[in-house]
Length: 428
Ligand SMILES: [Zn+2]
Image (cartoon, rainbow, N blue to C red):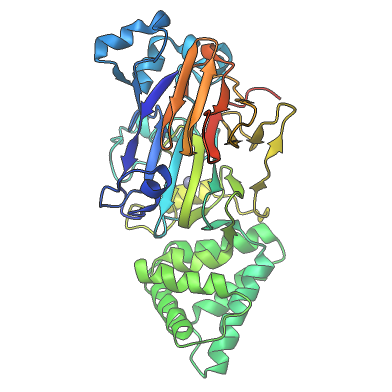
């Protein structure tokens, strides 16, 4: 088992206090958006020398006891990942765990399917598009399904709502303009027409396509709608949706994503609730602290709420226009007492490990490689190869060859320990 040092990504939307507060360490002073726990080549965690037995991997000491996790794994993929993981995902850690703290909205985005990612990556490589170029869509040939588990109330936009509901929101807006004697922007009746089409998929697609290219008409309609809302137009029963429109427009005035948000499910997760985001799901995290897990990839197609490049044709090929409801995931409790969130992806599952003082140890669900982070109290991990104690904020990589690992409450502890562990989901 290797204790990890992780990289903090200081994106501007990050909270300045939430991650430091959770992990019990001093804040950097700047935004702290994401803590990456994994082996993604852009920001791999650093594995510290193994405590206890040196084992077959004493070479770590040659690097001053520190080395990037991707390098460590590459030295002996079967030992670190297990044969099944290597066979399915290759000699790399297939998942990435993040602690994510959004103070302001992230861009509206969608992730490709595996086939789209492979095709898109091959196409852009063949065309010689620089991997760092602004117009580059596919940074690698992997898909990026993800999930988020709320640690605080967590606000997000997630997938298309039924067309009939989106239509009801725009109808309410139209009625408000009427009531206030204001001139209705011509965009609104057009959207109402789009959304009235009998086939839901077509209705949502037409409305999305009308908005996504942006331009003057969209920006004008957006500012007229925001002005009406700010001047006190009634917003019930769509209070959250419409105040989101106002907030988004403050940050990205006139951006197509502002009105697109009304086509999407506006969700508020309570702490402990989780959703997963399959390929094609249009989403944006708005506010809150959470544990995010994803397949290790960087493939994001942006769809608004961003000053960055939006490739509309490619986006339209990738977006799923089906209103399938909000994909919540409930934890399952296994026979061994493990509380596990298993979204329908093979790259990852997330285990929540809660240990009261003096509680029996909990075996970690481990189907290959695993990582763990402690967010409260302290946890003692034991494997057949040794022990590792992690304090609040501590994290570790657990090689496949060191399973099974048990998590123990630390003796003498007074508070409840809480940790989150991620492993692959290759069985069942
Ligand atoms: Zn995403």
